[in-house]
Image: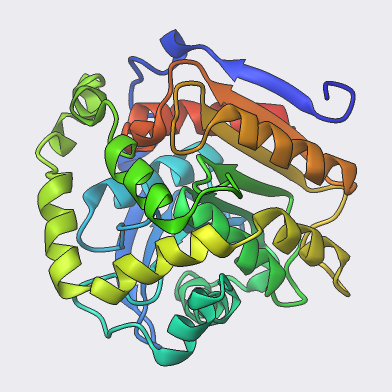
Length: 324
């Protein structure tokens, strides 16, 4: 494997106590509602460069641009480290204050197809880019964590012709075990998705303002108000072949990714939702298809590590340096 792709481990001590990155207080940010009723959270860390590059972040299973402040902090951290613009885009049908999931997206997700929802998200991305004076050709990176990794693959597959990515990130990709049935997959996520959550939120004193986030309460409210949003996405994950979607994206006419794109596959060594063995298989498959794969592992990391903004910040630094 080492001959096919770069493999590195991020030591636990490197992310256990992380300060806010330089320039954090200079980030401008805000949320817009697009014409097709998706929320886009925009974080802009450009310093004097009116053009710059843009990164698209796709949400985890139950996250959105309004109800989960951790999502907003992820966007700000990424923008600060990259010195550019980050657009954090809602998955259709999840955010409480926006319309329910449309029937076309529901039907597609039932068959494990994320592309119809991704097309709607591209419409929202276009409006978000226009909000900060950018076009599609500024999009240089797509990043998805957990469910967001599956959505990211569909985003790449449906990207407008002007988009060519320097980097694609798949972090803590959920549901890579093709032998799992739906109930086993959901049970595994509910049992292990929040592993270490309480400790994770208090490990970094610089992020003290986020300790009050109640993930259980937020999820319960979403389950009542957005039942479709919480059901259809796990169902789709369990039926989606993420590797095939990415390979198809690479092989399409005028693709957004090619052999020059750095594709980072990252998971925690202790993650039970996204185990290393399945990430290794995905990395090997994509490397054999001709993509440039950077395989990262977070020592001691679990699925909920992404809710530790210190972990997220350090993972961004590692990902950026290895991709270069």
